[in-house]
Length: 300
Image (tube, rainbow, N blue to C red; front, side):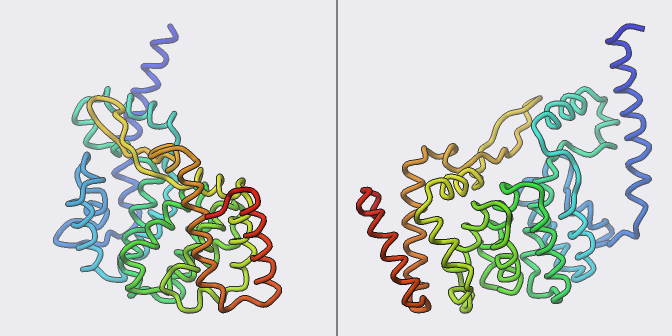
């Protein structure tokens, strides 16, 4: 049996297993319905429309209609384990595109687990006002355990978007958890969001000073923050299909010097809001850091 034949046979067997298993797996839990369709159908849309605004708006309308019954489903999507790396995309998209139409319709459309998580989190933020304290803790815990700093940064961008003024409980809980993140770029972003945001108690958080000071003094910390921060670019993959590919913002829109300067300015502005709450010792330490930056010709 030739190598190519074995590969083709393995692909056919995998496709057959997927066609059989996918419908069975979807029946394992009771379905939340809206207008005769399961919530999952609203969430994913048709096979090729997951990222479109009409699909996302329709999904939000369905989620709003079913209320708190949507929470278990959205939380499960926030834990999505589908593949995320480029090898997954290349392999699965190639495999998916080679299938007959009737098989494609029965298999999951090529989507990154990260994109699914971000979409689910966006919907959870939108219904933040209806969530209980325990549900808010569960969401914040899920985001804290996301596998990559880049994904946590995407979640922070969502959390600090237009919905943040509707209900600050989820935002505050999430930001305070991420102040202890293992990634220094994520910690800096969480500290900036607390210092700048609408939460009155934000500037009183005692962990902010040391984190922001590291962002002011350390180019390494700022570089890590910029490397973690995604800008969305679009890249054609296969068969005329395009998928959003998160790219570091410093690479998507320009080089490090510009964005490093902007980030330092943002840190300095955050300290302006913190200043009334700083101790004399902290004010002296901040003044020392600013003087050192000026001597190094890195002043703002």
